[in-house]
Length: 95
Image (cartoon, rainbow, N blue to C red; front, side, top):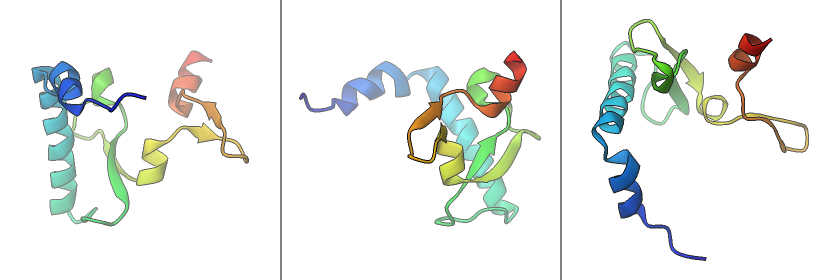
């Protein structure tokens, strides 16, 4: 197995201007929530976007504080196996 090339990954995706702007938006949302006292460093919480930035969401009125595990994972069954890579909100839109 080859060693992961982080430099190439950054240059190809994370270092693009578009991704830098999206990352800056996410960081700004976290800073705002910290100033408001909603979250603090090391509390295990994420500032999640109700509508993802990648799908056209903005910071103003579009954020919520959520448990990190809930924000970073997909639905799983009782054995811990992946149930769906589609969020509940996206599934309800399709129905």
